[in-house]
Image (cartoon, rainbow, N blue to C red; front, top):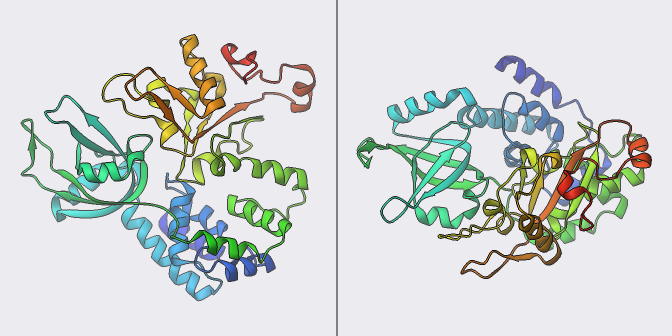
Amino acid sequence: MSEPEANRDVAAAIDEIPIDELDRKLLEAFAGRVVRKDLVKKLKVGFNVPVYVLEYLLGKYCSTTNRDEIEAGLEQVKQTITERIVRADQGELIKARLQKYGSMKIIDLCTVTFDEKDQGGKYWARLATSGLEYVHINPELVHRHERLFTGGIWANIELVYDEAIVHRGVTRPFVLRRLAPIQIASARYDEFVEGRRRFTRDQWIDVLLRTMGYEPTHPDFSPRRKWLYLLRLIPLVERNYNLVELGPRGTGKSYVFRELSPYSILLSGGQVTIPKLFASNAPPYEPGLVTRWDLVAFDEVAGSHFKKPEDKQLYKDYMELGSFSRGSAKGTIQGEAGFVFNGNLDGDVETIARTFHLFVPFPDTVRNDMAF
């Protein structure tokens, strides 16, 4: 889609969904923290970024019902997207602009690796969308945001170019000078509690569903279906809450864990090593995903497998106790992340539930284990 076409679509979307009484009540109770989900959908076209990144921008500039203010805010959002969110084919352009201007600010997914072979150790940042690698980063910045090691963080990033920097005989001119994680505006817990008091239980359920991107007034949303959709959120707010969801393809099982929160990580294909998930069993004994995220979701349980019986036992012990030990000097390690296992059912769900093994999408090593 061309930029003029995208702009027309977004402008038209301002009047697309009418503001109802629940929206007005929400805007009054949580001023500055409410965004239009229909605008998110329009803005996401062409940009491979999670929904919460776009919501961050909309919440910053468009949290209002005033049409003129929304239009002005949308212009600001589109300008920010154009200037800072990088497309996958713009990697070389970013390098050229850095060399020309000396510095620039972008929004990207940043991960960090540690090279223990370098004398004294060396941290390298990598920017996923722009493709920049071997980017210098201050160790203090890394330890302030340890999730950089495990899946990475979407963030506002300031880069500088210094061609005088040579590392091991190779010019490494890119430096990450500042990093600010994308997150909602800070708010006190008591402010949310006070705002919640203005809503009935049923109204609050509808608020949560709209926050997830669904329309609760749709006739297909029975009370039971609403509760089942909200069930997906429990692992994000309850420590060590484990969940299995099996269903037809394309029913949004992975959407919540990929798009809605910067505190969950979705592992595609169901594959992850034991050291990466729990902890390494050799120096430097780096803690894994379960210690740094609120939720670890497996996108396709059919691809999961355990190379050794003790690997499966480690999963089971962690899900039961919320802790694990790998025999390292670290002893018993605590984790708060819950596991979510998503799997696809191919065929009529009612027939499968009646006549097949309930956990048929799981691999053989898990399917008949009573712990699952």
